[in-house]
Image: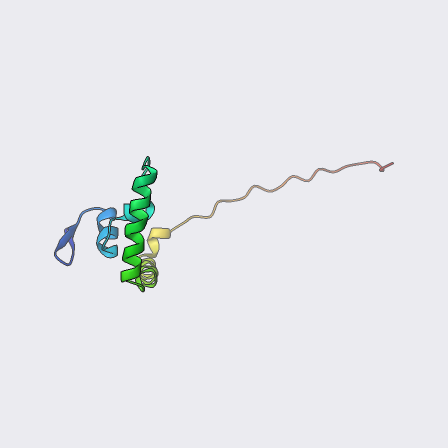
Length: 95
């Protein structure tokens, strides 16, 4: 089955995220090994995008909440059983 967002085909989870954001995820998260100059340029571009789209953070949170609500199985977490603590019984009287 093929999935499209607008006219773009989304093949991977990264594709869905990039198409939903309208920007590459790396713009916001960075990449391993980027230089200080590359990081500064990336952050500058991100600031420009946020200045042009002041509702972007709210829109992103709304999209994330909608995805979580529509796909609860994404976070189907099984709680781990915590082992019972052993109590050390001390006998005797403190001096």
